[in-house]
Amino acid sequence: MLPALSKQRPGRYHLPLPSMKALELTDASAFELVDRPVPEPGPDDLLIAVKACGICGSDIHGMDGSSGRRIPPIIMGHEASGVVAQCGADVTDWGEGDRATFDSTIYCGVCDYCRSGHVNLCENREVLGVSTPDFSRPGAFAEYVVVPARICHRVPDAVPFEEAAFAEPVSVALHAVNRVDIQSGDCAVVVGAGLIGLLVIQALKRECCDNIIAIDLADDRLELALELGASNALRSDREDLLDEIRRLTYGQGADVVMEVVGVSPTVQIAIEAARKGGRVCLVGNLAPNIDFPLQSVVTRELDVVGSCAINGEYPEALEAIAAGEINVRALTSRVAPLSEGASWFARLHDGREPLLKVILQPD
Ligand SMILES: [Zn+2]
Ligand SMILES: [Zn+2]
Image (cartoon, rainbow, N blue to C red; front, top):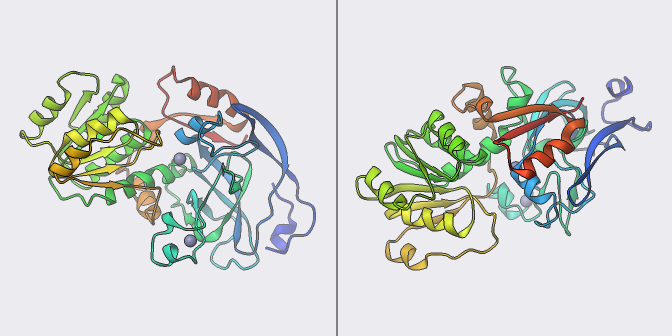
């Protein structure tokens, strides 16, 4: 709890703030629950008391230092929700106690891309809970986090904090599906039924795709894909995979393919699964470079697009969660206290258990 002073003098806080607990990545794959000063909001910022924060695949891949985007020491965490604890001096449209979630991208709001409505491509883009040689931005695996008010969104009362923490990955899935302009009745293939893939399947269903084929190596994920809206589920290691996809798409291939892994073999499946003139959306980007089936794309005139982060999908994501159109409960493996975070990161990194989303809550 913050001292009562913040109520009397909102945004003009000069006494030393109390400290907070934070889960810090202190070294490659090493975590410590540390005491840190509660960060002070700037004039346009909100101080959010974090109520829930999801562990993202990019945190798990990045924690060993290999991605170059989680350079320790850093407090990670960019899928969060909470309550406004203090408003910056110039913030007028938020009040203490408001329920909020926020974009993972901190966009500047003034560059050409931001002004032309492409905030995900902001020239001065920073990402919450990420540190690179260019920037370091403390994230939400902590009791408090500071974020600019312009990236915040109100959470409807009907959406619990653990579900609101999904607004970020749900928005990522909605943005990817928005990139391919779904027509009612399109048939779609989704390569990769991990967390984002399972959200993409639900987003496609919401756009009235009536034939959605999920592809993955893990049987438990394929089962979940079927429960959440896929019409068929195929293991990616079966030899007749492409024949089977063609059989399920009237001999043509899919109108739309969503690739949600990002390595050579899965991108190749995605390209070959598309019909002539079809659309392929590349969402996954595990590998920086891949073997790309160039001739297959050119000679069959495919539209291949990339999808990065989120561009205004938050309100829609929160509505879809509130309406139950996107089921995030089914994807929640565990809600655990922040103090247990280190062991959950280790279990997720280890990958031997069938875990999807783990949500951490400050104790
Ligand atoms: Zn993420
Ligand atoms: Zn910008």
